[in-house]
Image 1 (tube, helix red, strand yellow):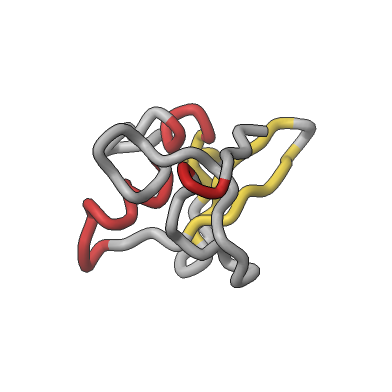
Image 2 (spheres, rainbow, N blue to C red; image 1 turned 120 degrees about the vertical axis):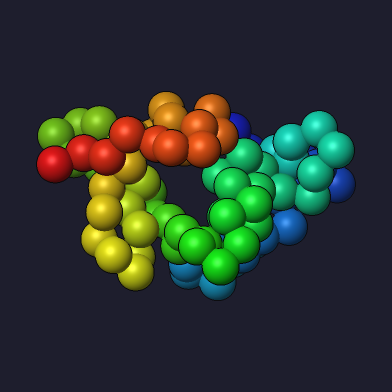
Length: 83
């Protein structure tokens, strides 16, 4: 896991209401995942991390669409979906 010290932690709140534990991206107040949500504006994804067949994926809580974790973490503007 990519847990960060308090002064460099992402400012976003996770779906459980706790502050995200990831490090901020350079020049941002959020980690890559949460910054991506900010960048999308009105098309914001509400993601939660799930494990399917031993592999981590992100699921949009609004739509149920599952995204490839690597794409989300790399801030890919068009992350691959998982069936």
